[in-house]
Amino acid sequence: MFMMIKPNTNFDFMGKRFIFLGISAFILLASVVLFFTHGLNYGVDFTGGIEMNVAFTDTSVDSQHVREILKQVKADDLQVQKFSDSKYNEYLIRVKGNDESLGQLTKEIEAKLEQKFEKGKYEIRKVDIVGPKVGKELKMSGIYALIYAMLGIFIYVAIRFDYKFSTGAIVALIHDPLVIVGVFSITGYQFTLSTIAALLTIIGYSVNDTIVVYDRIRENMEKQKGTNLYDVINKSVNETLSRTILTSLVTMLVVIMLLIFGGSTLWDFSLALAIGIVVGTYSSIFIASPIVLYMETFAEKRALAKASKATK
Image (cartoon, rainbow, N blue to C red; front, side, top):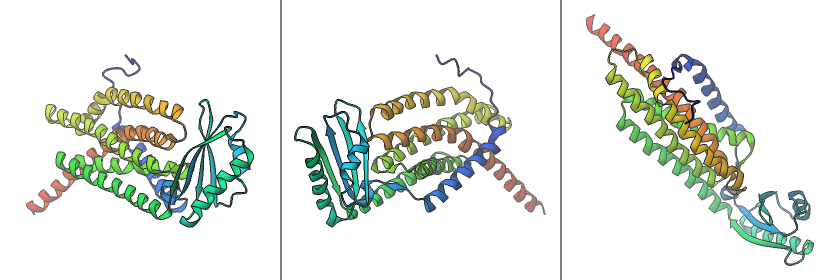
C-alpha cells in the first residue's frame, strides 16, 4: 500500500534545515506585511451586510447576468457568486452596508428580481442580514477563540515537553495560521467565520502532527543515548514520515471533495483546510524538528558557559 513511501527512508531533513527555515521566515514576514498593508477581504459575517441565496430555473442565467440586473442597486460592494451546479442555478448575492440601509437594500434587490423574472422562474431561498455592530462582535469573538485555543495548546505543550521541544511546537503553531492568513490576503478570498473555524481545526491538526514526531524523537533519544541529536532527529522524522504523509493525503482527499462539491458556501472553509494540511505537515518536519536541534545546541552552549564561569 502506497509503495511510493518506502520503509527505512533516510532523507537528510536536518541538512536542509537552513533552506526551509529561511523560506518559512520569508513567508511569515510576507504574510505579516500583507496583513497590515493589503488587509483581508472580510465577509458579511464580519463587516455587516446582506447574504441572499437565489435559485433560477433558467439555466442560461449566469453571474454576469445577475450583476447586470442588480447594477442599479445603490450599494458600495455588491458581489455575485455561483452557489452550486445542481438542478437549479443558484447564486449568492452579498452586499455590505450599514444598519439603516440593509432593510432597504434587501427590498431593492427583491424588487429588481421581480421586475426581470416571472414568479416561479426564481426563488429566494435564504436571506441573512448582519448589522455592522454584530459583525464587529463576531470578528472579535473569532479572534478571541483563536487566541484562547492557541494559549490552551501552548500550556499543554509546555507541560508535556521541556523547553527544547515546546519552543519548536509553539513556533510551528504560530507559523501555520499566519501562512493561511497571508494566502487569503494576497488572493483576496473572503475571510469569514468558516475560515476562523478552519484555522481552529488546523491548529489542532498541526500540533497533533508535531507531537507524533516529538514523541518518536524522545523515544529514540532514550534508546540511542550518546548518539548525535542531529542523527536522532533525522531518524525519527524518517520513521514517522509514512504515517505523516498518509494521514495528510487521506485528510486532503476529504477536503478536495469539499472543494469540488461543497459549493461557494464551504469554499473558504475548504480552502483554508487544504492550505493548512499542507502547511501543518511541512511545519512539523521542517520547522518544529530543526528548532529542537537549535534549542539543544543553545542549552549545551549555555551549560558550557556556566561551567567555564564556575572554574574561574
